[in-house]
Image 1 (spheres, rainbow over the protein chains, first blue to last red):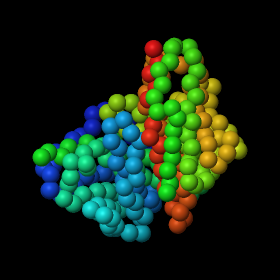
Image 2 (cartoon, chains in turn yellow, green):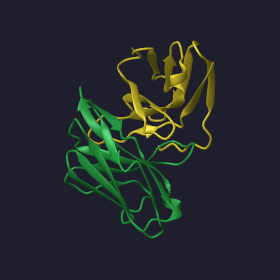
Image 3 (cartoon, rainbow over the protein chains, first blue to last red):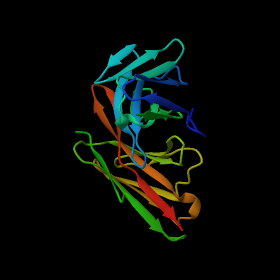
Image 4 (cartoon, helix red, strand yellow):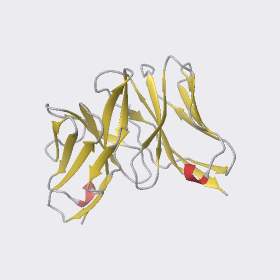
Length: 113
Length: 117
C-alpha cells in the first residue's frame, strides 16, 4: 500500500566509508525496484534499478541487493562522498501498463567530513 | 536522456486563485505521466496517473475537480490546482514513464514549490 512517512530515519556516515541503506517493501507481487536520490528542494533522481529475477546489480559506486524471501532491498554506496548527502527512497512496482510506484519512507544520508 | 522538466519551479499565489503546473518530457515520449505531492520530511504521495488522450486516474482522497489534470500530448501534462488554499501548499512533482527493455522506469521532474497565502 501507500507509504506515509512521519520522520525520516537518518544514517550518518563518515566520508570515504561505505553506506548501506535498507528498505522493506510490502507487495510480494512487485517485480521491479528502483532507488532514487532526492536532494533538498529537488525531484527524485534515478540511481539504480533491479528486476526480481536478479538478486544483485552494480552500478558506478552503487550496488543494489534484493532479497525476495524477506522482501528486503538495500542500497550500498562505496566510498561515500559529501555529494551523496540526500534522502534516498526505494520504490517498488509490478511491471505493466501504467502500474504505480509505491515509495518507501526514505532515509536521510548525512556524510560527515 | 530521459529528462523531465517542470514549470514553474516555484509559485506563490493568493488563496482562491488557480495555479497551473506544466510537466514535459524533453527527449522521450511518455504515454503515462504521474503527479505526486510531497510534504516536508515525508515520502512522495501519488495523486493521479495521467494517460495521453484520456482522463486521469485519481488516487483515493484526491479531489479530481480541485486538481485538474490534462495530458494533451506525449510530452506534456498539466496540473491545475483550482481555488487554491493554504493547505494546498506543498511540493508537487511529476514523473514520466519511459518504456525501456520492458520495464517502466519513471523519471522525475525537478518539482514545483507551491505556496498559497
